[in-house]
Image (cartoon, rainbow, N blue to C red; front, top):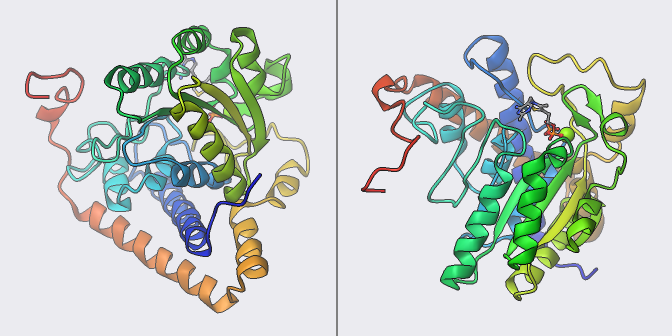
Length: 325
Ligand SMILES: Cc1ncc(C[n+]2csc(CCOP(=O)(O)OP(=O)(O)O)c2C)c(N)n1
Ligand SMILES: [Mg+2]
């Protein structure tokens, strides 16, 4: 596959992966201090998927996500202060603090996640793709979903309809090998999740999700397919989550040595290797970016914490459309 990422783009991808990881580490700490309540699913280990994906999309494309979406919304360009604000239940959050960890969205960034009902969000992306096609505006939709979500009935229905109507939709399975504590082999006969597309004749393929450049190239190819009017694609990024399913899961179900083995393909380390070997970037430059990111994440955290709490009277404001919307 042709290399399509410049040095500047790769530096930005590296910066964003560092930012996502730092935000998630701070979120983990805040959770143990009860600054975040409710569920909290971290994206650590999977950063390359969201970063490579976002860099291959256009701002006008619609993105739909589930509940592991902090990293996905950051990669789309949303300010970390808004993400922390939402996690802390503050008025400054992405949905004014009434949604929390699993319900981040940004109209400005065309990010329409997250959702807590496994698989329930997938048809919404098909709907957004239908709207794009109906309006003929050249935009596409992309939906992130997990290996577990690929077992839900509504997922197959969305695939069938998208394929039948040739909707410009990328169905992106993030296969991290677990659905809560259930490993992929225990829940799915097929372990190449992109093959879910075979039953409806959808173009599909699987790719390695640890290398942000590989992800970028694969999503760029998928987007090109959709934009050229050929209909949807289902692609699978093979990835891994380092932490438990949510903050309340100690992840004791992994095989011995599995996590350590997966960490050898860490997305941030792979970007560092590429930046040094392919672009001659120095360790000092990379460390300076990382240090900047740490300061930015901490400043966002502090500002969000100091913001006023969510207004309870707003609780239902974003549940139903109003005439003004
Ligand atoms: C309809 C529904 N069933 C069950 C659950 C409980 N649940 C929450 S996350 C999850 C696992 C989903 O795994 P996967 O799709 O692989 O996503 P990941 O968490 O790995 O990102 C389950 C079963 C739910 N939220 N919704
Ligand atoms: Mg999973």
